[in-house]
Amino acid sequence: MNSVGFDLDLTLADTRAAIAAVYEAMSPRLAYPIDVDVVVSRLGPPLEEELAYWMPEEEIPAAAALYRELYPRIALPMTGLMPGAGEALAAVRRAGGRIIVVTGKNVLDARRTVDALGFEVDEVVGSLFGADKGEALASFGAGAYVGDHVADIDAARAGGATSVAVATGSFTADQLVDHGADVVLEDLTQFVAWFDSWTAVSA
Image 1 (cartoon, rainbow, N blue to C red):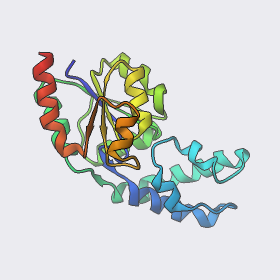
Image 2: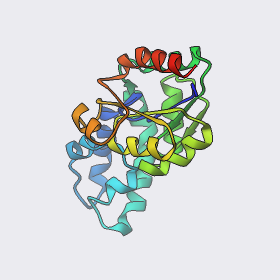
Image 3: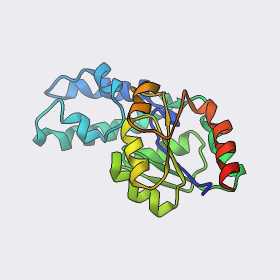
């Protein structure tokens, strides 16, 4: 019950500037313009889904390959911790819980990000979004799933986990409540107090 799943971008990892830099670097090599500010305003879905807003379907594989070629060199050095991320993971470990990261980011870059930030987690699953994350969470035995996107609430529900939403992405606390989150935190600095009370009740 103490095991917890976490989303990555804008939940544990601040990747806004990093992702923006990758898009800026790739743009001169693309035939179609991309509004980077718009991209960053809706981080969460897998890369191919975002690229589909900007170019024909047949152009997406090459653009995605270019993005992933540039990502390690450009994005990883620019990626930082979201406030409270380290403390949140440490709290789960103190309680004897296991940790899974389930993200829309491809698993290779997700693992690189986790490693670059020094996170110690038990499993990383990538390229999943919304309710599609549910099977990974259920198989892992996650009692809660923490994310910043309304789709992460759907993920928790699909995985039979408590939905813990953090208002650190593009959705306000009110929007997260309206979508049905079980718990809404301003950011992960509030996670430890919530988690300690949650585990005490479930003990």
